[in-house]
Length: 116
Image (cartoon, rainbow, N blue to C red; front, top):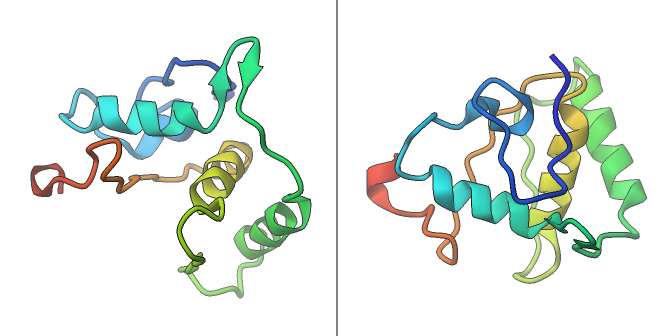
């Protein structure tokens, strides 16, 4: 199944692309949709993203290497672009695997206990 490009405000349905791991129809879907869409922008006004080629390649190598650890910790101070990086990388990763992405964000309301 080909993933759809997420460069607009539409979230792919469950089982298609980046939305595969998110509960369909769940209370957190709207917040997760807005979270992801915020890092792509809207048609005609894409969100800026650049200069991360080396980090994207490093994440690709981690995913492709069967000997790499199953978990990866991506850390940096707030506002450094961790979420933008991971959202952009996950869009690429859907070509090779079926990632599950559950963003935890106060700003988008996806940090509430009832979602977990």
